[in-house]
Length: 591
Image 1 (tube, one colour):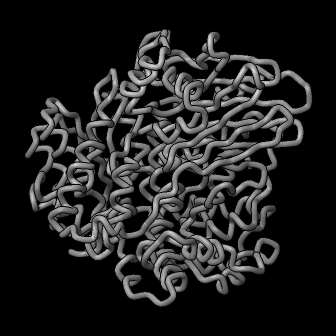
Image 2 (tube, rainbow, N blue to C red; image 1 turned 60 degrees about the vertical axis):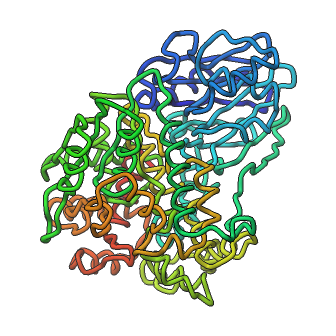
């Protein structure tokens, strides 16, 4: 796991090592164990390294293969690299290192852009061909590893974190009105290729991009699983689906143990992370380190789920670490949390993951985490109402959107409004694509390919990598997800959601964790914005920079200040925290 960056010039000038150095300075957290820069005329590649696989200097990056004429900077992990290496050796390739980076180089040479379809893992890489001068960019199927882009007619810059592009300068930082509409409507999610800034884009997941020497580019989406029933599997019953899911998950967890350092687990106490611990124990893993975090109560709402994480830790005898965050510690950690965000992310548990990762990184470099199970196996409360939907777009908007388009005119200043309901149009276009058998299938496809990427997955990447911690997500193993996409929705939604996954879990972990009420990563102080949190948000939104930006109507802000706890979105978020977080993020990054 690492941080990558670089500059590609189109104007005949040499790429700037100084520019790359500025970007690398923002990526130290992602790669505290080493740094490197490679210059190839109009291209400069930079890399910050976190040593997880092949700890020797032979695996340092950017990696150059003179024999093949290829250079790469790579962020992520290819879990099946030993098997791919064996295939490549059988084809006559020889290796000078023992890690996964060199396998990507050889795989590109052997199989071209089809190589990404062979990779099991999370990755963002940029590769240069010496002979053709072409540059290749690729991102994994779920966008677990980020890749931000800033392009002008003269040059293209890229980085693992948006603030690194800002550090290099020459970035358009005006607010994208369409992205703002998504942020305010689509639960703070800005779908790719947009970001909240007009001058920064992001390479979409499951995309490989080839850039020619004249700057022309071609994208190919290499993965788009069907959410349709397979006639050959029509006879499968609940037990057969359960067993297939359990087998696929066992393999997914096993794959994510590949490392030359120990691998732990972020244990929330929910069924997803508990199942990961149970499967690792089942596989004979001893001395497993597990980590949980909790916060103080607020408004009578409990701020931890230690009773369940303690149960699992005791059941499997893990080396368990509990982190309790008092209110004063939470407040002092918020600036660092905002700094770690590549984009404004409104979920309260950002600070939870930030503080948890800080503690975990003192003990270990790699963890497995339970993100993705709800989007893949139908665990959220908005899926059951869609089972018999005759208008999936409207019904989805009713349960997921933070506010209807009509209400935006009373909340955003006139110059920041859009005439069209662009968020609803985006959802409608996505929902109506072929390849989804039912309304629930369409919603699961949207959530797993868009919402998941730019909310929980991005959150975990940003907060863990701020402390040089690599998080691996077995529920996003693409073969497991392809299997889940074929499972009938009723198997997923039974039992209050994630029914087939809970059936699988009953074969492994204690029922107390499975049958509990669904929990979230609670940070109640941020849900009910009052006291010092209200003061912080009000100060940000009343500042000169906020007034000059003029995103929100003052009447709307005054209403939120008067009664923050009364303005909660359908997904249980604070409307005041949503607008305040955006301004706090913009100010944190000097925008």
